[in-house]
Image (cartoon, rainbow, N blue to C red; front, side):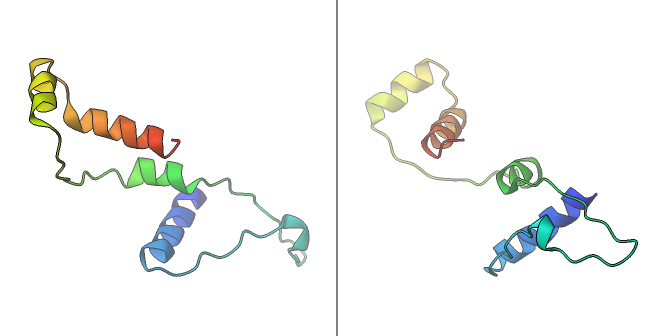
Length: 91
């Protein structure tokens, strides 16, 4: 549940435009007797993919001839746009 708690906290900060804290270096953490360090591996993009996958409607403009060909070939416009955007942002 640590990953979920971290994701919720970091998402809140990001959504409210609050600067994210820097990750701690385990060697610089001072521990008292009985305490220990737990490393939590976290990838914000992966967290968002799993937890913030609501769809957002977008309007786009393409040439009519391209629209006709794509419709004839039963091309899913949303899927093509998602794939192209993920490719463009290197995901």
